[in-house]
Image (cartoon, rainbow, N blue to C red; front, top):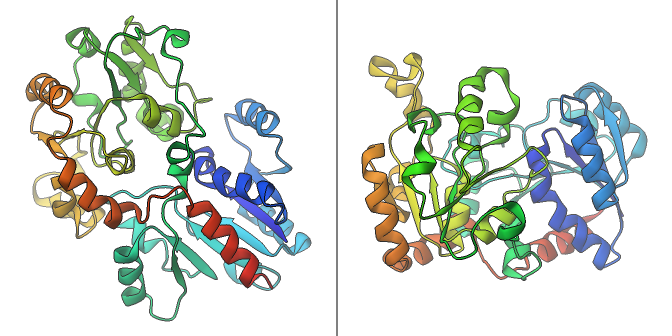
Length: 356
């Protein structure tokens, strides 16, 4: 069995790698990775060497499609929609394996163009997909990105090694790129939380896209504080950050739900920097961007309506980490499915049983 992983963006990789490692461990087949050329090629080359990946480079999706047609693999994995699926399906079956479990409506609409199978996190979301797309195939496997943490295969960061204090509680600030809370934080944010280590893991787009330059200016300013570790582009995986932190601060990010699924306390920032086209009479655009369950999901965290509330909430949740435990555990199945560390095994098993 030959599997190809389409890595259109580097942040897709942490979802693919647990499947890849399970494939190797079970000697169930071989795998190739398709990387798209961009501004971080040298960093991707380091990751390729570290993980010892079989790979090719492409410039665009047309080139990727030509490779797929030539290889005729058993399965091609995509993390999002792909414009040339009809051609891929002439020679291979396709998989959609989403990179996150957040509250954005795009989680569902990226299945408007059907892959041969989409692996889904939990029965609730599987049922919704079956209602939305009754002629397509959805299989509940769980959220394989968390398998390495659940199976104790990753211990997170050595805090001392990255310049932080092992005696301090560790906060993780992991905002999304849009709509984001980053620009609502002050320049001296880390100084106001000097009694904590602060890991900052912004979205890949915040670090790489020109339109988010203002976000980068703040991030680079915060990086200068002694209690801060700002993720580099080489820190492409959120998993070590999830494993290392005691509490997460975030906004409407998939990261927030991944952390909560590990039964750790979360503070949800309701204050966001919205473009004018998402405010006032255009606020419907923001609501459209979010999933219908957005309001219900909000119960998984305590909420900071404005930045000035953040400090007291952090102190409260650090001192009382079990306050929302019952709610987190109740939502974990709905958000991430079965959290037993075997999601990757279920994926590989399905691929073997249904390989053409």
